[in-house]
Length: 260
Image 1: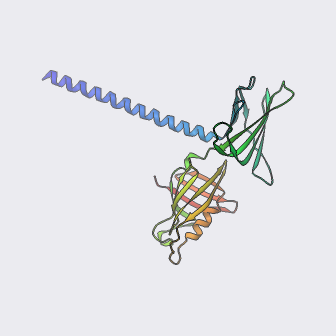
Image 2: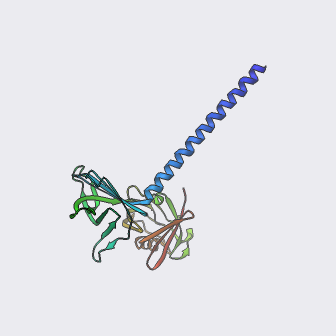
Image 3: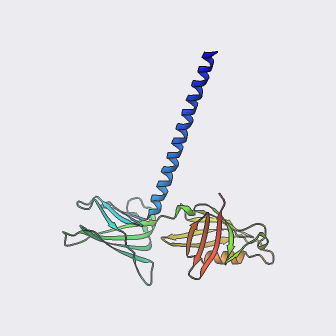
């Protein structure tokens, strides 16, 4: 009997240890994923070029240039606000530290990687030099913005143009959107018809474009037209308390609640 009790006690200890180890491993995995996502948020633009290979990341706090160029293997600058062109989507960053200076220009223009053939939405040029050098090294490449991973979810409408919405404002159910931040696309329900389209994302900028919908006739009083108009008028966003708020310079347009 004593042997049986001893075996049972030993088994429970082993199972307990395994459970604790599994939970610890899961906690570490979750923590690692969260840290990785936070790192992606801190870095909002990435670009690369070839011959010679170079890369640049622009983040909230710092901008890092890396390359295979002798003397410029890794240069770190404090991030600065861009100088924006008046008549085109072009941004210029003037960077400097104690040993080097750089000018980074980002232009919204389809750009093909010279080696992989991959098309990116931005053409990037870099002029960089160490302070001991007389001339800058000129480099060209392609880049893209990292879409905020927090947008990647299903969102159900709570407010439209400053007023709380109810199912009676729509045909069957409340409007919703499901955003795929890795593909910069969305799909959902407008309150009467299925909708889909693309999202345009830059730092502090979010737009819903190429919005398409089915052609079902909507009942009287349905506010789907107001909803889709507000969606397409969006230029900025904020996320907090499981809510996604979409706005433009005139004010708050839409408030969604996260549902998964």
